[in-house]
Image (cartoon, rainbow, N blue to C red; front, side, top):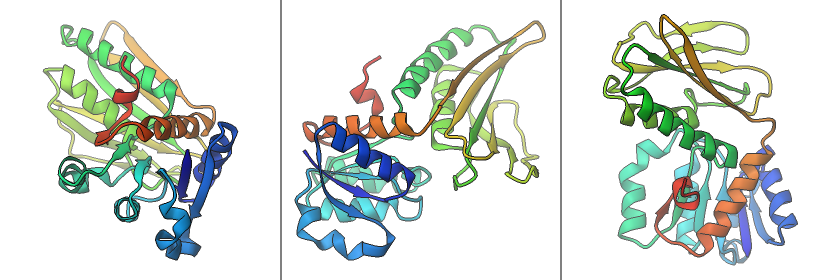
Length: 251
């Protein structure tokens, strides 16, 4: 398979390494300094583009890849909600293909399945309140994280006592804590921490007067995310439309 890489930061470089190790060809790499290569023959020759950039540029990158006839795997977060209708139209009416996930880690996919099952059980035990904490590196631009939001939405879908999620505290890299003072009891609170080079830690805690139950996923490196993105590209090669991690892993 021929892969084009959009965004050549730490994730892009790791995607390149893993893709080559799995026998794929990298036909084109696009970063800030060579945007004109979106119109190149090398870019158009790819089967799938893997995109890890920013919330501000991700949708535009997807459109450029679609215009070149490529399927797209995107791991950029903080943009999909703003372009939900555009993406649905492109995939459902225009024949485009987008595999988007807030997190491509196999471990996170397993953790999400456990999260959904636990939330289903806890719906019957109203004495437990639930809260989430996500920790990421200081370079991450969005908060809560995309994965944090996905996990929260899974819980809200299963718990009758929660109608949505809300931002709680944001602990910044310098230790400053910014608090959302508009807290509602019927909303699931997501607290965010930005610290060092942490790849990603997500914890869900159910707390009662008697005890607490916590599940946690702790990524040791970005390698699991990059491998998952390449696996997603392999899946996308033979599938069409709007795809996500639950299509690839049927837990």
